[in-house]
Image (cartoon, rainbow, N blue to C red; front, top):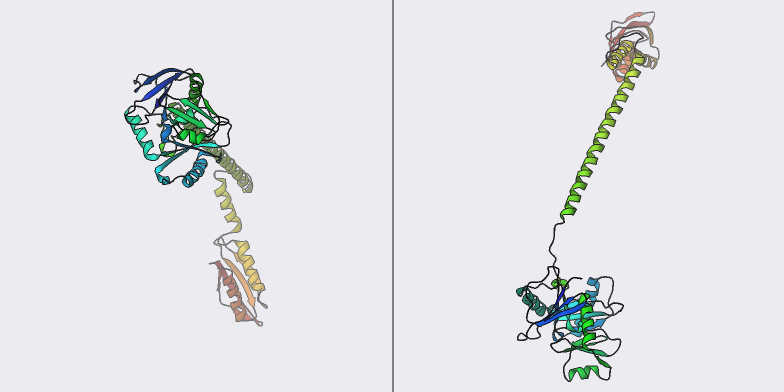
Length: 365
């Protein structure tokens, strides 16, 4: 168990400091003044606030979070205090096994003064505990104990300094138990180990210094390296897969192209050779099939016109021997071919037996 040093804040500026040290669940030292700075680094420091400076209340507060409980406590204190709420510091605690929670109210300026005094003396307390909270909470009535600089009283829902006349007025006919030194020491040790109410909350909470966890930094660095390595590996695997797929598709396309080439033809570039053969098969220009089909459709759409012969040359020109009943029918055929994307240049048409015959030379535009 780590050592614990309890510093009793003076009730008045001219009063001496008092302190006690706890080790292994027992008080081992009591003294006045300030302890020297030669103490173990893991010693926990707790400051004890005078009972006269802190007002204690109890209330049934929300147990969901400290922030909610503090907000509810501020509303209760605002109704019961004549001091402006902005000048007060309100802290909420928790007694084990009790529904009602202790509320400590102290002047904010007093908290500032205490912390400044402790800091100037070289102490940074982990908590500040009101003196009455060092006594055990009675099930009924009140308990009184002497902490060395006057007696303090704690009741079921209150705590205050023992003052002649005032204590009797508050206690009335309720039972009062005076704690002997042994019971008081046990109660103080237990309260210091787990204070039921700590005034260091909110704006006065202990600020912990941020420490760099180098072990965690190293783990995070290795984790980042692992993630980047896995990402790079996945990318490389995908590249290999894409290359293999592209090679497979290229081989398949090459095999299909070979099937369209003439048997026995030496294959160097299957795609280009297939395009060349297709051009030879269909002919130049738009090809014989498309050109002849367009001419046939145009002539069939003009009643009285007929095709008497076709001639297709390698340049893609289709010579159409056309017979028509009139010049207008020849023009109609030319118009329909133009709409289909072809030009039709006529030769000289001659008339015989009531028919006009001649040649149209058809080219793609």
